[in-house]
Amino acid sequence: MLENLSLNKVLFLDIETVPCEYNFEELSPIFQKLWEEKTAWQRKEEFTPSEYYKKKAGVMAEFAKIICISVGYLFTEKKESHFRIKSFYGDDEKIILQEFNHLLKNKFNDDLSVLCAHNGKEFDFPFIARRTLINGLKLPKLLDISGKKPWEIKHLDTMELWRFGDYKNFTSIKLLAALFDISTPKDDIDGSQVARVYYEEKDLDRIRIYCQKDTLTVAQLLLKYKGKDLIKEENIEFV
Image 1 (cartoon, rainbow, N blue to C red):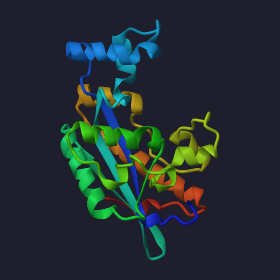
Image 2 (tube, one colour):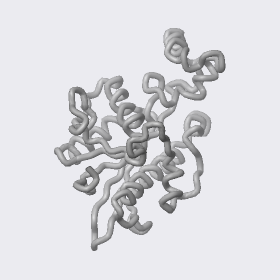
Image 3 (cartoon, rainbow, N blue to C red):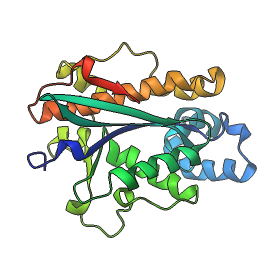
Image 4 (cartoon, rainbow, N blue to C red):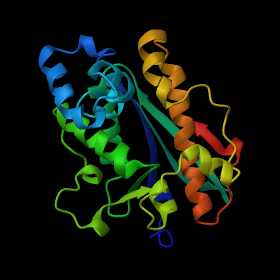
């Protein structure tokens, strides 16, 4: 797939998510009960529902929301790769999804268009699709995969590509960036801190910057996988 991939038709992305309520106790009684039931086999005797909520609620689409989607695409100018990044972010998840889906419909809606993320097949793509439906929105073409054969689904995953069929392997984007000598800004926060920064510090810009960094790294990784030069810092544009 990589050999015939049109890089200018790939939309690279990363999302940041937080629990719909910061604390377990803030959930309605019915959702507290549903959380207890959904996580019973995972928690076992190690964690209370409240403790496990703090650890994992932000990555479960039934109990979390998207606060940022950062996207980017490659284009060539004067024979050099350029990268343009844009973020949809805020407190209103429905608006974020509407703006993101509008981009897909208008710019990435043909048979050559592809989505690419790190661990996207396990997290980003299904999370966006589930939250799209929860918000009463129509799935865009690239996320509507029901009934499609595996080779018809236009999703690329830089973590899956690194597995080479080894499905026991999980490799973080941070490790791959180090392996391929991809320069990344010094981490200000990591994924485990996003909920605290959102709810306590109310600093969406800090989260946006973190999300954009990972989106750029995904693009750099794919270029490395294809044996191409990295994007130069002066060729990165923010819109």
